[in-house]
Length: 327
Image (cartoon, rainbow, N blue to C red; front, side):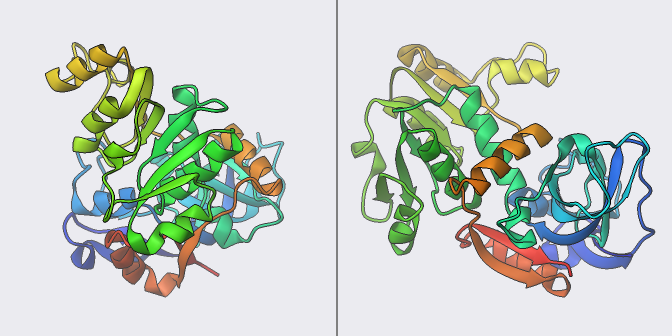
């Protein structure tokens, strides 16, 4: 079967290549999915660059991709809740990475049935961004009437998180560039901050919660704009001590400036490293069926144009998700 693989670390042009490999074999708890669409994510091109090779070591060549939608064509002996012919979608676990392929073997624990009211392309756009948003926001207890800032509202995670937070009854601030203000407002954000014209730190004060999708200086600034007892949940900042312990890192301490800011605000700071979860995808499916979440796609590319699609994704200009149509 045809696959797109990382053949070496470095630039996208040299690091990616189409190859032929054998169709995967499934274990008793797996299903074999004929791939219809694949959602692209920044983690993909960061793997190509080698930025994550210490955290996510790869045995090259390695097929790229984590998000997938398609049709079940084979199931393992232990599989009882999926049938051949079912339309499904998933974010595959690390050990099954490689959705940019004509067929993908997937552990059923991370799979959900595709909502009937969306396309395969729309379904493939949801898993990573949806699971990331839910896990990050629920970890700090997002609740009705919370005032929350979600950075980068036009991005994949941001566009989903805005809709999810509104579905939970929160008041949502978000940041974006001038050209995307109206587009992001249409997602449901209550106050869209044009970062090219406005300093968000003068607008958001005493927030209940900040969703830090950018890291760097934004993590410290998030701790400055929350109220006393407020919460910061990050997917791009530094490790918190609880998460470090879960990852087996002993004796880890927050950097002094972050620790001081946390103490001054009696804040709850967490970094979330998303994990595949079929039950949470089921919850996303329910919200999609109810119209509370609408997939947001920037561009759909053909499988043959996948490398070009990654170049576009890496520009950071996509509004919503970039998706590959396989067949």
